[in-house]
Length: 83
Image (cartoon, rainbow, N blue to C red; front, side):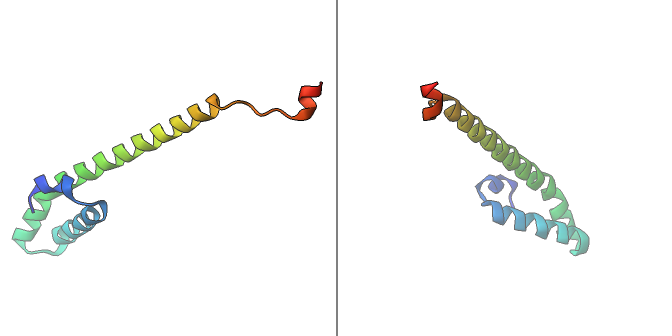
């Protein structure tokens, strides 16, 4: 597996690849263990990048929601207007 292809992978496929690499590190042949060990840092870095991006998007969405709430006109009740 070429680490350069990791950004192109879907999240689910990347997670499966991580699980397979972990399994091969534990129980693969010597060459499989070496390949999995070499690939794990790149997999972990890509997963971390995706987690950070997802968190940033969630923060942006929350800020946008707060901003739209703050910009919305306040609703008043008839009692308050009469007083």
